Image (cartoon, rainbow, N blue to C red; front, side, top):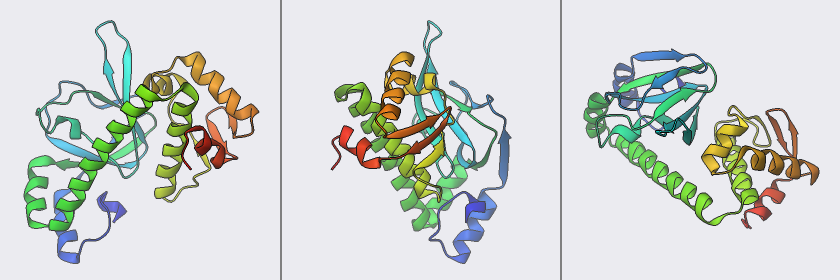
Length: 222
């Protein structure tokens, strides 16, 4: 099912229908845009391999990171209601995506209830993620924001079969700061603090979470 860029749970007939639907794959090199703000909405994109960030460009030229997407996640849902993309999607490393024409997806979803339920769950997950970001920016201190961010990444890697305590950050410290509403200096200082306290081992972009309970205590997650 990984070849279809969609989750398991479909029968043979449904798999065959999806195989016809998802017939375009694209290779996006590091630093290139999958789409830009204002582009016409025609398809969703399922990340097969790689990592993306979505971002907005302010009038003064500043970039605001709005999210990070990894293998098994969808890009482009921001454009469903407006028929045009509201942000840029930039590859943080060489990546592969499956292009899923939205009109065809709607038609097939109506015929395959399992797929329709998955699509609704995916939309709901995006809403919950946005709410989580608002909570991060509105009520948490800097160390709580970074701890929650790292725990979220850890769980997402684990859900995809990777180690949850050892991973590489594909994004820069500047990207993390933009996403969490923190200055670069604050991000670097907080990483150093976590490292000094033995919560993390940080070597460049490589993160080893030595004490997951330490991160959970910081975010008050018991």
